[in-house]
Length: 242
Ligand SMILES: Nc1ncnc2c1ncn2[C@@H]1O[C@H](COP(=O)(O)OP(=O)(O)OP(=O)(O)O)[C@@H](O)[C@H]1O
Image (tube, rainbow, N blue to C red; front, side, top):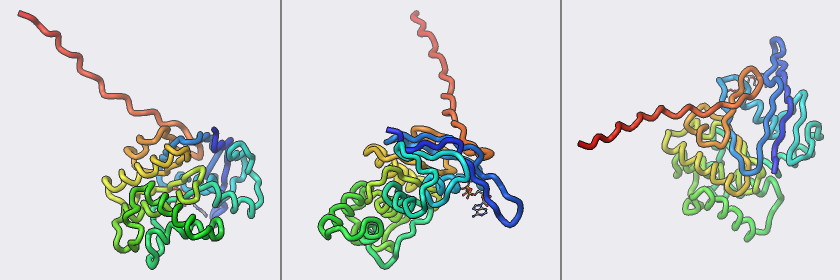
């Protein structure tokens, strides 16, 4: 099923100086369970594009379909409801509340998005989300006791707990070392196995290469990045029998 379809999306930022077109006709399709990496130099507009997809910001032109529904000009209140129902967000900074445990941080997403669920149901959802990212055993820990990678996995569990259709991850490994970053990428990819779409903004080519598709944002448009050609294989020497 097609989750996201962007068709000629444009966005011009009107700063203090002259207006600057950041998105200049972006086309992008994301299927359910598909992962897409977005590369691009700093300032190319990757975060702006993610904000448009996640309905934090609106495009000036083009067409945006979410699960086949045209949401290009959805009124703000309905966009806000759709944002919390359909998207999970993961950022470079974890934004965990330090006085709450891991489980309580994850539960906050349920309270904000869906009102109060019955306590037992809420607890089951929180534990399932923590299990998805393999940190259920850390449910009662506060962020200060967790490593950076564990804190980011709490943030991913918080994004997953409402069963989003699409995960939007903006440089989620930016503050982590390579090994920890790999664990976080694996946790994000695991969500796609359950049908969630994943859009990852990253500067890390190795992480990008783990996604099903890689695109690059250049001059306001997306273009596919082709996989690196495989190294030429050395032909085997003929076996000479004496
Ligand atoms: N609210 C805003 N008003 C004016 N200019 C903005 C605003 N938000 C972003 N910009 C500018 O728009 C451009 C694109 O920013 P954006 O953050 O989308 O790029 P990016 O590719 O995500 O960069 P990075 O890789 O450094 O995070 C930048 O030049 C930025 O300074």
